[in-house]
Image 1 (cartoon, rainbow, N blue to C red):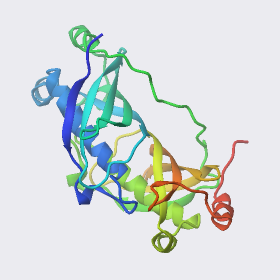
Image 2: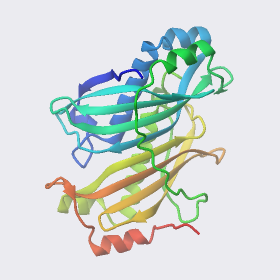
Image 3: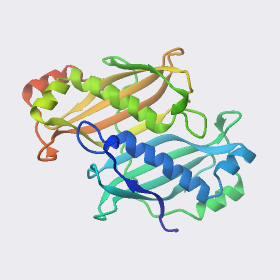
Image 4: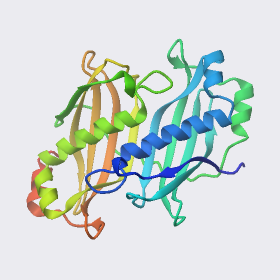
Length: 293
């Protein structure tokens, strides 16, 4: 087994934070993108490799546990490694630490296909690359949890509609992961308001939603100029927890291009801990609840 190595180091600026006054989940994913670049360069699979071999690794599934908050002025670093390698798939992991305290604040696991950049489909990883990647495997206990996700749109409500901008694309020429998350986050804001957790209520009562588990699947590529929509529903509703699920579609084709499961806690923004939802909010949220047949 190899050792973890540093993939990112930086800090939390005010524009990295959201209405709940901590680092937004899209900012975590933006740093994962930086970690990806760090990883590929370290492995000799970076820009030069993409240009000459026309191959790269593209995320198809990411899962994270958000254990502790990062707030304005905090400093952080990430340490990553390889979980496993298959014929066409690479599994990566990253731990995020508060650099000042040493606390582990988040764990991420990412699965990426070996992408033929011209054919735009998965390709086998060459034997020499496989051997190089295998040599960097690290000990890892997967945080991934399989949760039920609705197969149909029954009970879902529209929560976002917009168009992908060219400046939102990454080095692989498709929508960057953190811009998926920006869209899902805005969809969640709409869904929260429909569930009674309105902006006015949150401002007046110092309440909000804090995500503690995120599961994102990238099913098809999204390109510059594509119009996308998101629809959302509630699948789990507890005393102080709520799980929203989101489905992103290409507006022109109707195909589902990505999904996200977002488990969060109803947050007391002053005490910085979860608190029970008022019964009127729980009742309204229950009207968005979809269940397994």
